[in-house]
Image (tube, rainbow, N blue to C red; front, side, top):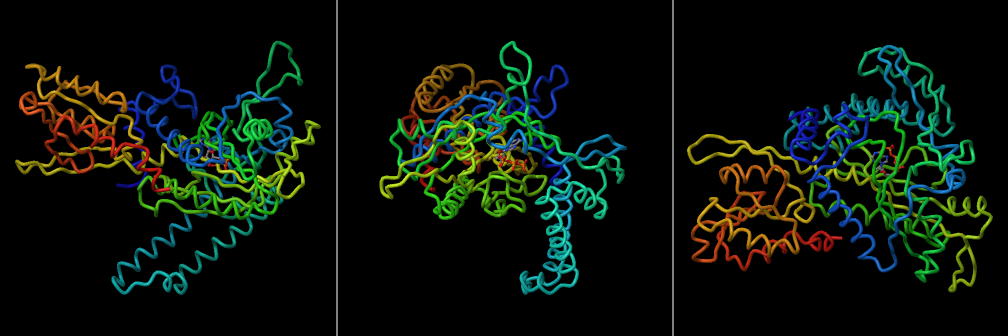
Length: 516
Ligand code: ATP
């Protein structure tokens, strides 16, 4: 299936099955804002739990907080967001569509990379078994030409970003012949900077002093609380503070569904370390976070590490964990070595000392920080893109049936078990409810007695329920039920007393945490 079609299907599926709705759809929606429906909210909560347990519960030197969205406006002056949290935007004069200049260039680079992949695929077919990718890409004239294009473009792009050279960014777009995907024209405006923070007023007094911002990242809430947490928690360096919460950015290009939203959620952890030890911890967290994604069990080829072309004003090293979404490899998580930039800035702007006294070294210093920052919504989308599967099933009568199944890792699935009476009579519903009530203490369950059993199975497949338990007439006599497994549709006859054990083994978060 073409990736574009897959993406459309995923979006339609999430809407049809209560995962994600456009915000205020009744009023034709609000750009790049989405609501999570009954199953979406469950999946989101489970992802949050997986992250929180992996970061806070499994690490004795990491604690979690929940800071407010509104913060003192000077926080954002100190952090650099008021002056520098900008994206370079460019408009196409014909379509009147707005784009991020840097994203247009990155997409151009990706297009060239895909041309290399096509050459490799063609050659692979031609040479068969004897094909050696490494030799091919280092010798084939066409591939080398594409690679040189990528390298030249990267060097030029990097330099333009480093120098904040907006004219050069526009020139690159013109020289590369980049066209607007809507109008197909090269009729571009100049590139301008655009601040991404949403501003609002606090209280009833108008004017500059009362302007506050919706936080564009959760990290600053951690920085300004770092000393309070350190002291009250008697934390010793190295230690971390974690937080999950909403962030807001007035994104210029807000397409691609929940990948880029104006209101979204982040799961961030700031790890405070001794100055000079940050690179060791940077490498450590890169590895740990990679494992967290891999533990979900999807193909590892879907993830790649990408070092930043341009370091943010606060960072001395930065890597993205990218995921191959249906629209290409894009950032899923950022791991940044932020030096002592933020804490030093807060020390300067607040006039209060935020130093840590290191007993072992017998000296005070402003700690360095390594941060891991992953988008909850992007993680959600990565899981859905991996989980969405269409399967043809050969039926007993030789005909072919189709099913859509969400193969979400069982510990994250919104509904863990669906309990169903085969028919709506003869005491089967009562027996089914008895089982349900036992399972409900530990698991989110569903009771379903409507439609044929086949239709009910399909419904549960479509929302990703790992287990269906069916109660039939024999169950009343032998205390046995049929348990059906989502991924391979196999069925087994088991004792009612064993269901809980079977389910728990598979859906416990422990299954993921043990892999870390
Ligand atoms: P991008 O380059 O895609 O705009 P970023 O580098 O600005 O992302 P960070 O500031 O590093 O992103 O934010 C950390 C994480 O927050 C990102 O890796 C991403 O998962 C998530 N995130 C950032 N912006 C958005 C958004 N508009 N919608 C959804 N998630 C987002």
